[in-house]
Structures are given as C-alpha cells and as structure tokens.
Length: 219
Ligand SMILES: *[C@@H]1O[C@H](CO)[C@@H](O)[C@H](O)[C@H]1NC(C)=O
Image: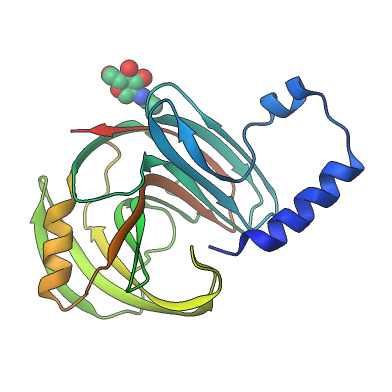
C-alpha cells in the first residue's frame, strides 16, 4: 500500500475543483481511509489511479468495483485483530485479472504486513519466493512464504518491512480461517509477529478492473 499523503493531496485538489451534493458523494461510496461501520472496522486504501467504488454494507459486508486501478486494497474486520477464528462468504470472481482475496493485516514492533490468501487471480503472490513450509488448516493446505518490502508504504508511513504469506493451494471463496494456525506456522518458521494492528477480510486489485462482495464475521 502507498501513503495517504499523496491521496489526501489529490483528494483536496479534487474536492476543491468539484462541488458534489451529499447524495452524489454517498452514491460514489466512501472515501479512502479507515473507520468503524456496523460494529466492524474497515480500511480502504488506493494509490488514487483509476477508480474504486467501495461501499460498506450490512454487518461485516462490503461491496466494491474497481476500474483501471494501479493498486487498491480494502475490506472489513477488526482493530486490533488478535488471533480469532473468522468466517467469510460472498462473491469474488477475479480469476482472470490481478487481484487477491485474503485475510490481511498488520503488526507493529516488528512492522509486518500479512496475508492469508484464499484466492488470487493471474498473479500468485508467492512467485519467485522461497517456501518455508506448508500447513493444514480449515480443510486446506497453505504454503508459507516471506517477502521483503524496502521503502514502501505502510501503516507507519514509508518503511522497510516483511510480508508473511499463507497461500491456499486450492483457491476458494467462502469458509472459515483459524488465524492462530497460521500465526503458529509462521512463528515455527521464525517469522515473528508484533503487536496486533488491524485485520480485515480484504479484496486487493493491482493494475486491474474487477468487483467483489464479501461478508466477514467471527466464527
Ligand atoms: C453471506 O451469507 C449470509 C448468510 O447466508 C447472507 O445473508 C449474506 O447475504 C452473504 N453475504 C454476501 C456478501 O454474499
């Protein structure tokens, strides 16, 4: 993810240039940022290229469509996001474009961005990385990877940090995720986590167009 500063600058410029009625703003979906909605935390971030129409829905649901973006990610969950068993369902059909459906979160000290990937499109995020191990959880086999991000956007601004990945070998849309199983497998691989920051059931799009409607809840 990229910093909010450039987005805010662009948003201020756009807001100054165009006066929209409140109804028009509602119809366009919520603005990038984080907040609480219907008892869930949400985060929606974009590097502001292309268009994203992100809308929070009932309970832990959201609906999004995106067009010609460079990079966007968002969804609903919890903040902080300690280990919990979650369930999710919905529609995500982006197999032919670059997109992820993943339980996505952050820790601090150390700063870590993590993904439990349930489905991905044309790009497997573990491409070109070394597999640490596999784990069995919630009826599937996941491969564990680590990648490193150097001077990249993070929840603490531009930083250098690791990304931990569990990537489900057989993609699916809907089911339960016992996060503790993944945290344990990462820990056993020497991949240390820090203090819990947010955790969301995220959709991400990279240089693509697509759509999704996803609902998350405590299992
Ligand atoms: C998730 O499942 C619930 C229960 O069946 C259903 O009411 C809801 O519409 C589903 N959410 C999505 C986003 O499909």
